[in-house]
Length: 92
Image (cartoon, rainbow, N blue to C red; front, side):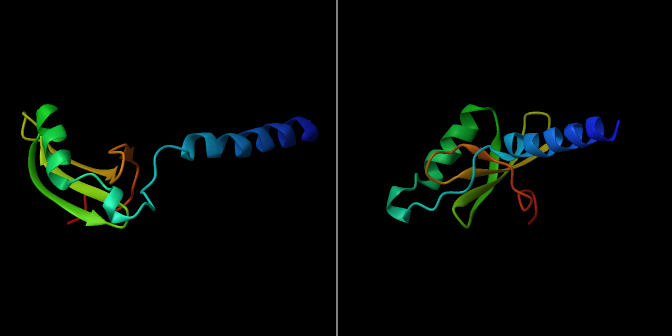
């Protein structure tokens, strides 16, 4: 019984990095970053009204409103525009 529980616990711990993967902020030099204007265009094409975009580390944090008036805050890798799960997104 203890061995079964131990194996299950180890398997669960090994699975955590798979969920934590995702995109991260970039370490690329600023010369390789896409512009804030390009991110604004992308977000507008998704039906969002962009209120503010700020730079935070190697990410852009966007503060937008959807067509229903809901606040949509998100962080994006500044080089690839991949969405990043970032705790700070939405503050500010």
